[in-house]
Picture 1 (cartoon, each protein chain N blue to C red):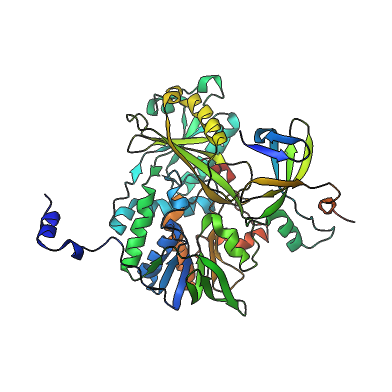
Picture 2 (tube, each protein chain N blue to C red):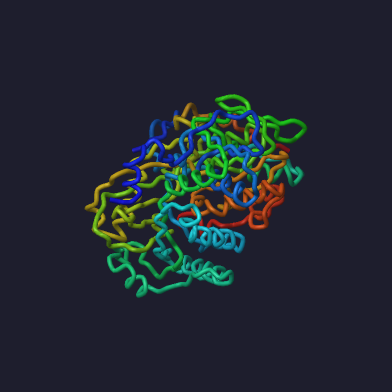
Length: 413
Length: 90
């Protein structure tokens, strides 16, 4: 029996502190209102309180904590991007991830697995070499490896892909990791709440009030709130929020689907991504294969999953792992991805004073949870963009300064 | 199999179509950079009825369909005369 349990037996269990503090009534004013209680929103609240001393903060979540894309991704963390802007940003995120369990005092099951992005053609090998060079230039551990190295690391994989497009080589990224994604939302939420941040679930923002071109408050399903700053961190709901301010953006919503198989014995201790076969797969600590693919073919505001997704994914998974054909699927699901034209996020200040965007997270947002929270908190505190997110400003779509990240973000999650 | 119920050629599997995206009005010749950037990048984004280009690959035809992007149902095929605004005016 643990000492803690023994002590609890002698006292009253009601005195044991709950994981989250009891919810308070909505106040009439907050310094900062964060829309969206997913990983990004909760992380932003945590860093606002911890690093900037801003604690009159409300996180408003229309559903439940981590119920959106934070709980729907395939939990992969990596920084092997294509552009300098992307590599620097995601590398800063990996560094935060590595110490996050201790920082938040919660076991995130952060597991560094290594990450192979397979190349099935000479063109793909060229992109892998390009990414490896950009990564190494910024001190990120990535290298191009040949078929033998892949065969040694993943002996169960058919490198000839059943006669399909054979694997030529891969980009190997040693820091590639998986994390228990729900715990990320819970850990940030508890740590933020301990520092005075209020988290209100079942509270939908229905309008944003402005006066003279600046934000003055929000209307919610539980009444009006005045505030000095609003940060939208809602992923697939971004266009509904920006429409409240008549703010045009290039964001379009596409469903992104994923699934897991029944658990089997451990055979895959690394993360495998194939851009040509449009799949990524890792084995969870429970033994399930966690698998995902590219986004659905057309815009859709729905989290319904489809047979076409499973059919297409299974077709490609058995090319790489023929024995996977005998596995049964346990669950499949979808999230709404806020896609951008250049596959980079849209972050920071906007033409509306006091309104900040953390959006355009498409299919690549989970890995950025800590650094998005930290840089958005710094941006809100200083009222100007943190230098790491300046390239991701909304204005780049007006002056054509795009951050072309498709070669590293599209299927390789 | 997911289908697109095209009012002109009937229900067909979605695999037969290529998505062409939202129908947008191109700027007039000589429009400023801001108008051009708005046309190239910005999209409706929010859920609702959207006019979109769909290419039916087997028959090689482009259609403009009105689709509810919340329920994924095709409401109607838009006659080409109605989408004439998609062609730049002089």
